[in-house]
Length: 288
Length: 272
Image 1: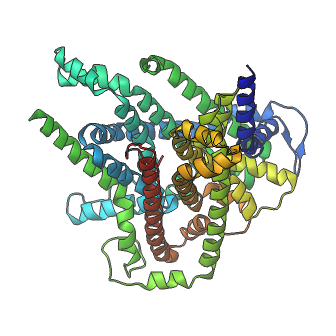
Image 2: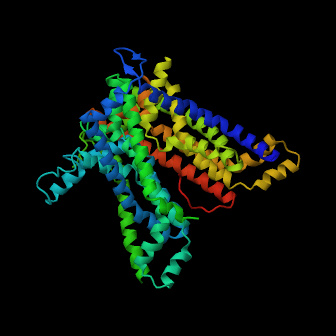
């Protein structure tokens, strides 16, 4: 018991600096936002009266609803697209690529992620734009007469840009889950007379699900709060929830309302994530 | 036979996917050396003017100096804090470990706009002048989870008996840490510094809201994206940044693998 106390003490004193730092720079600001969301906005100051009015306004304003729904739809589409496209790549690197070349593949996949996010977003605008690479190539080749409009500075181009930005976040967790699968289980499935497709469906996929679930959350949560892509691609005309929070906080200087928006966004994301994990709980029990 | 055909289909798909990932980056140098001022095809002619203009730009230099200052300070701070957390979580059992670690790792999934806005509200409320320092505080917070992820791998694969041998041979706790543990996790520390540096160098949201009037590279780039005339110079800058990131990452990867080799680990695994 004394040893346990000594170990706990050593561990706690080691964890203290990073934990206190996160407490000061993250927890206190988050709690401040939470407190602000219940206060009233005065003209130049915040009035310290407890109120639910900000939440009432956030929940009933049709514009907030439109922007929140847009953020959710974009995030859901990006997540489905990213994870769907990433799975075969993760599968290829884990099951087909020779072990000594796996590190190189992962390195190649991660490099684009580390290059300037803003410039990448801007380049997607260039690629998908009216006179962009896609449209000028297709019209040049005579395949289309008019530029494609469904990829022009709209929600679709936001989705494509974000699907590109979050690709490594989807590939890596799925790859890690696939790597952990005991290969003899697959052989057992085959030996017992399952077809290759059924072995994949009944053995590989369920075992890979923890990685897929991690990928879904890692892509979905930050995407819903993306600020740069709607700003650059949509030119501020198709805001998502992050842009709206920023406008309330700074441009309109209504911090209580902005805080209520931020808290609502966090609650929505947390609830969706929790429901998603609950619905998929059977896959999390699979391992060990 | 069927194994090979299945593998080939996946391979073609994966190569196409890589092309999708690299598409924007491959366009960068094309437009950086294109003499036309409009970023579109067909290309005009070859020029290095944009790189010359980039070099002569005073605001850009200021942004670069600021970004390097921030990235250096934030990566050192994040890595120092990360060493404590990684050591604590891999070596000791204590009450609340899971919860505290989860909270420290939270910025990895929290949208940056939330981190930036809440920190901004507190700083403004306290009357703190926005400066490079406030950006460093924010960047260290978001780099810390990545530092911990890398450092935990380094610390968890340490053989504890090496430290115990050092105690048995009369070293103090600090002496054993400095002489035995630290050299063994050094590749992880360097890798963590490089990754944190790269993240901070490219971070936009926190820099945009917490830097006050000081430009950083990403906020400078953002301010220039509105002006079509400035875009070619930004393409040149982007080309240089891509090369710089690749060099930094290759060095980081080299140290990570050397660290793995030293402790007998496998060479696989990504930068995350």
